[in-house]
Amino acid sequence: MGLNRSFLTHTLYPYFHAFFEHIGWRTVMPSVVRPQGVARQGASCCHPGAQAHGLFADLIARDPDRLFLPHLGELPYGSNSEARRTCVFVQGESYALRSAFP
Image (cartoon, rainbow, N blue to C red; front, side, top):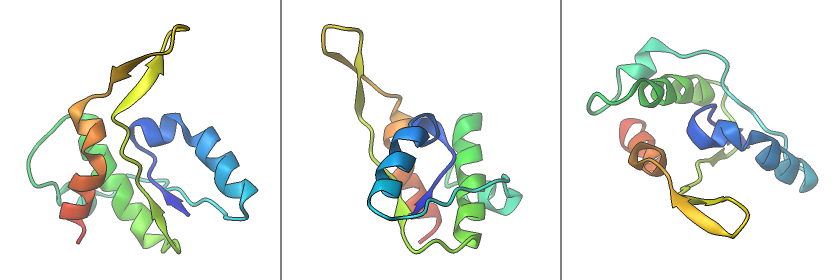
């Protein structure tokens, strides 16, 4: 299972890795930011967004069987079960990558 080393997918990697390992899937992650991936952005955005594109290019080059690009709109915050919205670039990562890498 290919997971991009970007935004919250990287932050939550231990959780995702344990889940996929439990069901028998090996996880694959990119290791370098490829400039040709950064160049595929449709428009300039923050540095982490540019890195996401470059890392995704490396992930695709590793040819995983499947890709896992979760849409994380909000996360729990604090002890009283409140949730906080994530950045719009974090929320839209899977859509931006699908557009840049059809």
